[in-house]
Amino acid sequence: MINLKNIEKCYGTGLNTFKALDEVNLEIKKGEFVAVIGASGSGKSTLLNIIGCMDSPTDGEYYFENENVLKKSFKDLAAFRNKKIGFVFQAFNLADDCTASENIEMPLGYAGIKKSERKRRVKEMLEKVGLSDKAKSYPRQLSGGQQQRVAIARALINNPDLILADEPTGNLDTHNAGQIMELFKKIHSESDRTVIMITHNPELAEQADRIIKITDGRI
Ligand SMILES: Nc1ncnc2c1ncn2[C@@H]1O[C@H](COP(=O)(O)OP(=O)(O)OP(=O)(O)O)[C@@H](O)[C@H]1O
Ligand SMILES: [Mg+2]
Image 1 (cartoon, rainbow, N blue to C red):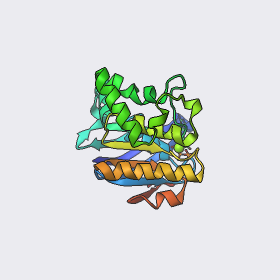
Image 2 (cartoon, rainbow, N blue to C red):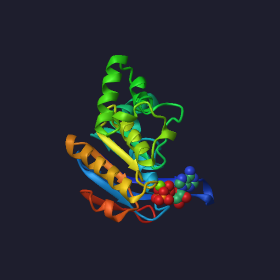
Image 3 (tube, rainbow, N blue to C red):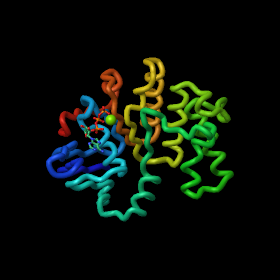
Image 4 (spheres, rainbow, N blue to C red):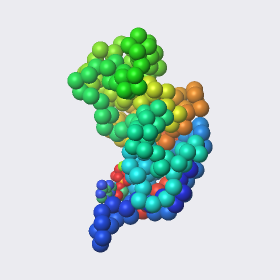
């Protein structure tokens, strides 16, 4: 599904250049559950952002299902990302003035799906993440674990083939972290979805199919 060839990412210019990723070669198969580990500053988020087309490398090639991602136009890339990839972040990143339902529905609006179909899918997704009773709650009325479940539902609503998660359990206690991990495993096993998850927690990483370790920008 994903094929990265000699990916390099430099930040800054001239003498202030910092190489965050160096000669990264990586293949990820469709349906794999991959954990990414490594020290703070090692390049994990940089890698995930490149895979998620949120950022581009300074050198190298990136193929997604044999398509050359780096050759896509800005517009094509935005459509590709919306259709194929769901993101989950450490800090949930929900819209504070929108209810759980409205947050989950948001990507469907961008995708131009009609209202009745949107309502049906949001309801189904709320059930999937176990939050049917919190549909009308605002993020501030939800626990951290519940907020993250809303964020996961939002990432899944367009039925993406790839889920990228950057320390999704980083702000949660052990119990909630365990529940979120179970949810990711369920999402993965139900539907041949590919999941790539950054984590600092070795116990969670152990539950993935494969662990990728990054040290100073190298795998
Ligand atoms: N916009 C930027 N400009 C300059 N340097 C950057 C920028 N973004 C990241 N870096 C540097 O690139 C390196 C990798 O950063 P990255 O965010 O990928 O680390 P990480 O492994 O995700 O760390 P953490 O576990 O703390 O989230 C770090 O040394 C960081 O300082
Ligand atoms: Mg990071």
